[in-house]
Length: 229
Length: 88
Image (cartoon, rainbow over all chains, first blue to last red):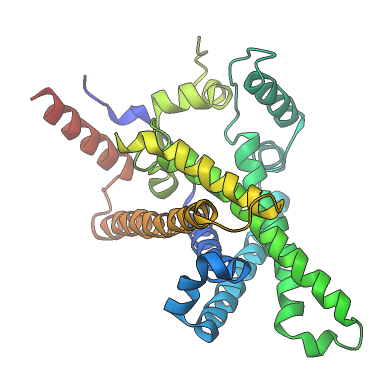
């Protein structure tokens, strides 16, 4: 079997590749320096290894990078949406009715109540959910609560001690929620037997024709005109 | 073989987080093991990211050096070489 050049399709732009890398790296660094502080009796060795003050410094630096990347991505999305193809952008980035149907069907399939073949568009509901969860949970919620915890003296006139404790609790809880979203993503792109050890499409920007046909049939049909059975 | 451990590892680490956060089990070797596995997965993710991004930077460098270079063609050639190796 000879693989021809036509058997690969472009799926991610250079901008998406760079933004994904910055998002992912900064989030991972935030986990490595933040989560051990939530479980000191189990993960204290990480803090001992890095040092508490150094881990705080790295944590804040990574947070700044993440927030900056999120602001950049939001501005880019708004500009792209306004200046370029509005309809196409709405279809691929923002969740739509098809994603809701896909979400319901997938969950019914998992529960064994309905057997429907996946029919994802260019980005599935899971991928769209992931990028928006990073922006909403990691950048906005964790960003705002993190800034309050970083410079508490600035907010002291407005908040009481119990407010700060609540904000601390929110910050920790959302961090764990975020970790619980990212770990399954790690399975989906690295550890699943179909893609082990690594799915390079997020770095090369291209995807194999058969993979596109199998995993994203709706998108494949749109770009090639071929219907997958 | 190693890819078969992926699902149990993820499930185990997620379960320990749930057990800890719901106060069902907050101490003991199981929780320590599960949380450390979660952190190790994060560490592996960092390594995978850096490796993948370095690869894409090399591709970018090749595009700069050789204007006719195509990443799609490169991926196709690599996979073709892999197939030839497997056939032999």
